[in-house]
Amino acid sequence: MSVVKLISGARAEDHSAIALRAARAASGFKSLGIGPGDVVAVYLRNDFPFFEASVAAGLVGAYSTPVNWHNSPDEARYIFENSGAKAIVIHADLHRGIEKAIPKDVPVFVVPTPPEIMSAYGISAELARSPSGARDWTEWLSQFPPIEAGPAEPPGSMIYTSGTTGHPKGVRRAAPTPEQAAVWTRVIGQVMGFNKAYGRPQDMVTVVTGPMYHSAPNAYGLFGFRVGANVILQPRFDPEELLQMIEKHRVTHLHMVPTMFVRLLKLPDEIKKKYDLSSLRFVVHAAAPCPVHVKQAMIEWWGPVINEYYGGTETGAVVFCNSQEYLAHPGTVGKAIEGARVLVLGENGEELARGATGEVVCRIPTIPDFTYHGDDEKRRRAEKAGLISLGDIGYLDEDGFLYLCDRAKDMVISGGVNIYPAEIEAELHKMPGVGDCAVFGIPDEEFGESLCAVVQAQPGTSLTEADVKSFLRGRVAGYKVPKTVEFRTDLPREDSGKIFKRKLREPYWEKAGRQI
Image (cartoon, rainbow, N blue to C red):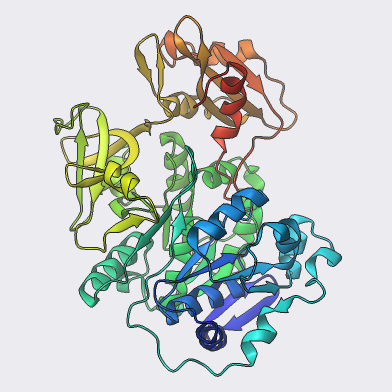
């Protein structure tokens, strides 16, 4: 590609055109009184205006807050109100679903839903059109001159955490100093492959495979745009379509989650062999544990281009490993990157020895510290030993490589014994006929909690509870074999493919009259 592009479906725009519209929108935001520390809510799927609105917010020193468009109206209203959003940019079809949730007197700018998104989500032409009387985003910003200059380092996005307990909280940082920005750029460049080791930015081509309301795809997509890489937006993840994109556009970089690997590996062999993937230079994954056999199979298929990092919205990436390091340390999520601190703590906050399992805490002290918007107490609870807990259980090996056992909130205590569902899920993924699965704790009168497995079988496959239990016996300890096995044709999941485990777990606890 000679001219750096942003591509979505059949549409393509030069980076310069997107940047110009962002500069015009920034002037528009400024005319509304939006400035440093304010918030612009971005209620969009992956589309050009997502970049325009996010960049424009930064140009006036404001935060862009991407909102999960799966939210119910009440959930959306909470984030609009809690963030204090001074403007909302939203796709037309999404606007119709939450119009009544939008606070009064907050300016709303509507983006007609484009054809590729209509097709991916089955949206009708009527819903895709801007409602009568709505302010059209593109028409509105076109009346303003480009802003002359913005802050040297914008504050970035304020991402709301998932809210597994109580309301979600906005993770927000002050605009970085030049020194902090340099560290941040180095870290992102390393873990996402956008650095000189992989060539010139204008020669890099990536696909944003996940929804940009998530922290990692948001950082990845916006950073790729910022450094001048070619960015392709996939409206909704489809495994074969991704292979087609890699071949057609000679894709060099990808950011993925393990569920996408699983879906890719389940494609028929003739499909997997059909496409030329030789352009790939740097594929990175994060956000969830990846079963060892899945990771090894991806490295065997795509070559030693698979990388991994671990971190969170609060900390950024703190550990990293490449394919060679992973194969030497199967199951690791990586080793602390330059400047990062990673410890494992015991129940009393003491640092544990190598090999001992406990709570993982981590931090890069030289990047801007975060706050939870409007919740200083939660921020204080997150800090332990001067580092930040992301809620994970794990251990460090003798070489300093970190291994995750499970999320602390997902750990099941059955009869006083700690059980990590991720271990059982990894074994179930090996079972012929299993498309996907989730294992979690449910109430048990005798043991406090017992294990439940919800299995999604591959099409045309017939599995029984006895099949699942028989497969697991001999592979895991007897007490780790789920007491309850349920089958579903579809599992509730986010648009990235990640399973909404909370939605599976809640009915069992509500039935027992208990909360989780």
